[in-house]
Image (tube, rainbow, N blue to C red; front, side):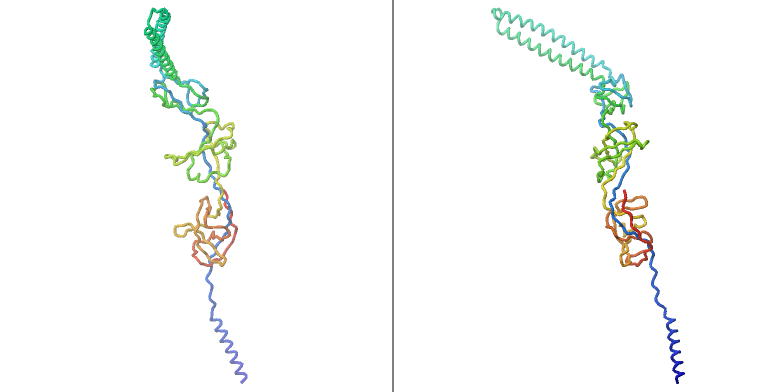
Length: 364
């Protein structure tokens, strides 16, 4: 009886063992393996490098004050001129005729004044003796004053004719360099039509054409370093002086003028220069391109929570750079962002973190 009982126990043990071998534990689904970075916010100051040229602070368009035919041109583009130097001349024949006519009128009026003066003197001598009347005396006096007024008017006309004649010579009002020429000898020009462009000596500006979007925020530094494009070792500094309020219809840019502190040797008028300026820094996060995905039409990133689950988080991209993006809004720092392996993720999915690193702060 004891032998049967022991056999029964052994049989039941074998049965239990066989049943245990047949029941398999459920296998957990393999989690996607991703690489994450813990983001860290820092100030990002975008910089831009521009190319411009050196221009004179004061540039003057020189033109004749009277019209006529150009008979002489004394300077050309690039020539240095001094103050009151004659740059070009017009044919003076017509205006010289006006001067001669006005001079003849002055001579005639001078003769009339002399004659009227003599008549008045006679009346002055005769009136006290009673040999003339008061009316004749008054007439002589009025004739003298009338002739004197006519002489004054003739002299003014002569002065005006001589001044007009002087305008046939185009002179430089200040020393400088001729930067443009718009007329040639033999050409008939009207008054005020530009003949030369003069860059006056004195202060110089570095002038750049900048897209308006780059000027949403002014540079955060007062001094701007200006370098010669051909030789970056030649540099100077300047300050922002003027930004034109009107956008050019042709180029879509605005003109920015930087007042230069000094002009080093080699950096002359017309030299091509470059400048780099940075806008004020803003709190941003720098991420590699691989971290960026989209939520419908909006840019987004995958976040991994403390429970190991994923979440699609919408962000705002402040700037696209080579190999990386600058996130302006949506991330505050400390979040774990998936930077590799996010192609097949979906919300609330458990993932396996392969590696974790600190995201670099945004650099200019």
